[in-house]
Length: 427
Image 1 (spheres, one colour):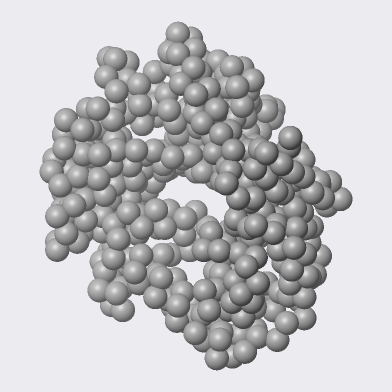
Image 2 (image 1 turned 180 degrees about the vertical axis):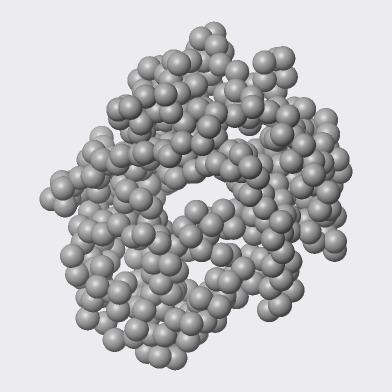
């Protein structure tokens, strides 16, 4: 076990990698009543093409299978729903699938060790049958239809579908009705055996927890048999930089038009989180709450408080979005497109840069006071090769020249427009 004390935030982190490869991280916080745990595998929505554990060639699986697998793990062989059992222990549980990972979590104020053991057990004991897969298809079909009816979800995925034609990142994480109905029991076990090996996973526990939880986890893992550790080989599908849709419109039951300007960068980063930090600094300066652009757009009546940005950098894609509701979406798009094209030549004021740094450091300090925020961000940092507890020092080390790398991205980028108009516009 490794013990690291971070004096600047008065936090002690205990870490140990077990013989089966599972990384265990525990952060005791005696002044909290609650405990939060999250178990994560490096497997998400973009991991559709890989060499399965028992094969030697790449296989492409139906889109949405990672999310489907997340759902199925809650159904135990004894018929018990794992989330209901955790509720009986006094815990609330959940799970989510992202582009690059799948996580299972709980929070509780009691029976911490029992909850940890059960979390390990239900995640590590898959039970799939053709019958329960068919039943799950019906459940997820309803989820798919729900997202199709959600304007904000439609705006996000519609923008990605403009930016990427083949890349898995443009496929909704839940898949489609067609794709999920292609999923079989054998496929699920193949994905599980490849990505749910302990060596591809970690468990992070923070809050009112004792170090005896290490013994609980070790005993639990020692009693199980796992396949030998094997390197996972993934393959991503990349679009040529010319493949994209310039603009597209859809009509939905909305009160006001919605606009998204999507930007696709022509670069994949080895450390996605660092570039995310840098672009967050630039965004805070250029389109933050007190930025000149935001105030100008507000005064013109082109945006409201729904306006904001979103960016994501992963192993297959790098993109950025500016979106929000607007009575004048086309006029807003023209203003934003002009703004984006000017970014490479913009001069950034040193005072504004230092203010953005302080703001970002403040966000990290605030996040470290949240058990959920700390746990979720620890995984993000760790999978990018970073340490959450030293990220404040990393941000402090930035000087204004780091923005040059970000501005450079906008010199050669794809820009697209996706709009949603009220249904009456289509009459």
